[in-house]
Image (tube, rainbow, N blue to C red; front, side, top):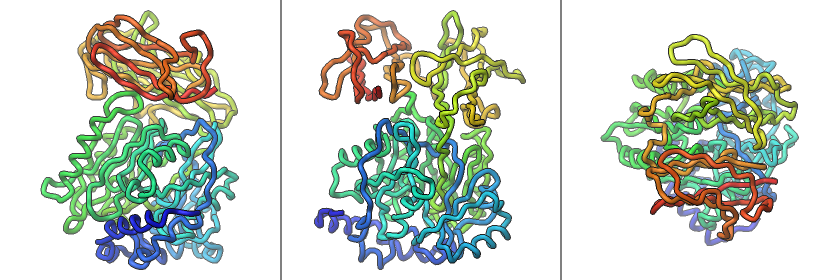
Amino acid sequence: MQRNIEGFFLLFAAFTLISLTAPAIQAQTDQAEEKGLPIHLTDEELTRIDEIGLEQILTPPPAVPVRQCAEWEPVTGVIVRYDMGFGLPYEILAEYSEDLIVYVVLIEDQESNAYNAMSNGGVNMANVEFIFAATNSIWTRDYGPQFIFADGVWGIVDHIYNRPRPDDDLVNWVLGTEWSADVYGTDLLHTGGNYMADGHGKGFSTELVWDENLTLTHEQIEQYMEDYLGITEYVVVPDIAPDGIHHIDCWAKLLNEETIMVKEVASDHPHYDALEANVDYLETLTNCYGRPYNVVRVFCGQLRKDDVAAYTNSIILNDKVFVPTFDISTDEAALDAYRAAMPGYEVLGYEGSWLDDDAIHCRAMGVHDRHMLIVDTDPLQDLESNRNGYRVTALIDDRSEAGLVGDSLLVFWRLSGEEDFNAVALQAILSTDSFEAYIPMQPEDSNVEYYVLAKDMSGRRRTRPVSSPNAFYSFYTGEDNVTGAETPSGTFALEQNYPNPFNPSTIIRFSLPATDQTTLAVFDVNGREVARLVDGVREKGSHTVEWIGISSNGRRVESGIYFYSLRSGSLHETRKMILIR
């Protein structure tokens, strides 16, 4: 692989700046790193920056549509690394092994030692699989696989690991062979700890991804993310510190499509202003359902000097959340913050050899279920009713291809305060994998609680919210109730179409602050109008339009990227959607 040598010099300068404080921080690391390298660049590695990616295996992008899995989606295993130790307490490994396969990456000579250590540590060895591969370090999150579905087929995306660690950088190819999975190699330097995705085509990183790819424009980086991971909206934010590793998981974490947890520190902490500025920015963004994010905070107590607890460096594995604790006074409040933000999940705290910018998330990587049952729904936020009741829509996609259990596609609902749920069946609608059900009309000023359930013929069961019925969605049937998660009346908003990508049809919702002349039109990538879906006066409030992929002249449009644009009075907003034939 060839790279611009001038870019290497610039990259070297960037890494040198990033690592100015590395020796001091490395002194804090302990047995967690075992025989491997630290999470930071060493002084010796700083002399070998030009070796990064020299052995990267490049491939064409995967087939479209590409959908990256979100961390909270179903997993069947978790990847850890062993070299005379794991960098993780055996209590965590034992908990992993209760429900999941623990994939241990190690060299063959270490198998006996690892087996005995895990067995003595209470790990369920029936749920352990050893994968033989040389490695340099324990940071499986940073060099491990990014899981995708490419045209419905499970696969792995492999970025260039942003360290001159060739063994680590080849692990994903070993995993691909082990699991008979396609691996797609990119020419992008990246690291798993500096990335989070929502499963709907949106990803987040800090500006480290720009600093490490100085020979690429921001637009080229975004194109890599779209081509290989299906990320159509890539949010890049400033990091909170001039030193350290600059990974987003050191201070922020997506808990679900609607919620971002962000570190909170004392007002006199040197990172306070940067954190609050990022919070202000994140609160201006809209989630995949077109509403503002719910930004929740977790206060991180002091460890030493300016170092604070790394509570956001947690990992979500199905219905469990593994949170690092530090034997300090803020631990229990941090666990409570997770419980409040993720009702119904089992929140587990573990002490370990954690640092302020490294903990559980850095040292483990969930393995997404290649046959997962995907269930998605846009939670009802306001009064949506007609003579049939309150319409709930859901996307249900069984990647096992075993087929859905028809009488187990349900919406369970009840009024707040009632003990038992009622059930209504989901019915298929025109869009692929799309369903709807109507909760019966209820008295005004009622709070309705509900969740969605689906089962497939492979035996998989999936609910939304994930931890239902311990958690559920709710909406209010009164006209005047508006919560922070809603699109308030009086707001101009164009929501992301659903489903997206789509075939053969998709739903577009929008909200108007006042009655006015309104147009909603679809354009191709060259800016030519393809279809006009709305053209006339529309009243204040929420509106829903379906597009079946037909142009204004009645012809079926081709697969591709399209833009839909809403204009009402002086207000204007545009979003992107993808049609797959």
